[in-house]
Image: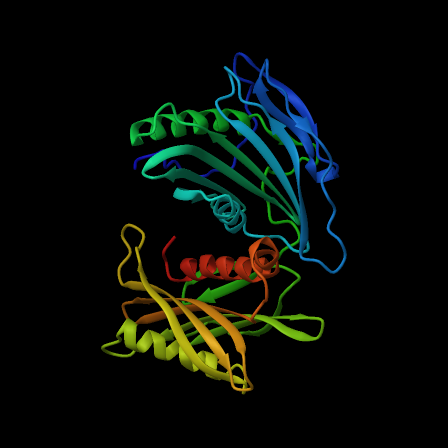
Amino acid sequence: MIWLTASCSGFAEEPVAPGWKKQDFDFGAPDLRGDIALPSDAALQSVHYLPRQAGTAGGLKVVGKIASSATVPADITVMAFDLEYPAAPLRVCANEAQMIGLDVVSQSVTDDLSGASLRSVQARDGQFEQVAFTRCLTRGTKLLVFHFTAKPAGTGEDAVVKTGKRIETFAATLFKGMTFTDGKPVSHWEGMADIPLKLGERTATLRRSPAWTVAINDFNGAIPAEMHLVRKRNGKDAGLVWLGAFEASAGFDMDRDGQELLRGFMAKQSPDFGEAKLLSNDRLALPDGASGEKHRFHFEIASKSGGEAGDVAAMVAHSGDRLYAVAWWSPAIPGDGRGRFMARLPGMTAYDLAQEAMNGLAGER
């Protein structure tokens, strides 16, 4: 299926398009107030957001709706998250799509990962029933989700593509007219600390939320180099993110040696960590012009004292004589659905930002 694949860029304020207007919105917080562009006959109905309760990972509420019409090609729902820590918007976009049974067609992010777009569909018995476009914006510890949904004119792929393009063109005009009264960009990482990293002549910045503490940072230019970010919650280990850059051994084999590298990392983290069961090993596509090999691994760790010790998601890249690794360990978290997702979100965010920083050190961007 071919759909719009334009990059997800930050939008600068532009003049309102002919037939459109500016409408104020107020979702109940200083950083959730501003203006949005809408067709002249459309209206945004809004309410205030739900503040996060102390001791929880976050709260969410539907704060806005725009009805479809002759000038609005989709029903639009706006959700506001109030989170304990800034979060990766692509993770939130993908989870919301999954929860309502949508299949993702394509995705894109802004250069700093603070904004994300998702294109998705819903089908039944081979017939397309719904087309969706979702835009997620991180604004510090707040996160906005704009969800556009419409039924295609037909059940075939051509109708889906046509509907999807119409929705996304409409959304682009809407967001180009969006501003916030706090004067800040529509998406940003306020509340994060910047950690400078250096490897050889390359430098990168890793954004870190207050959820994480730097335990080790050897990225001062030399190889090998490692960084450990640790997270505690209520006095217990709640996560670890590891970055590593090493000289690759001659004849390095990703399936064999990549797993061995990660198993060695896991074995050092806790005397209670037992067998690490490999759940998946996927080869990833490289950016244009990049050479080497990159894999994504997922392990489940048993506890020697019984039960589960959590899981590890990891990325390992091999390029020339260099090896780059990023891994995230999360303890076992009971439950499912949105509650479990929210509890894991600080770890997902740190892992995604660590991968982006490592891509910079590896010369992939």
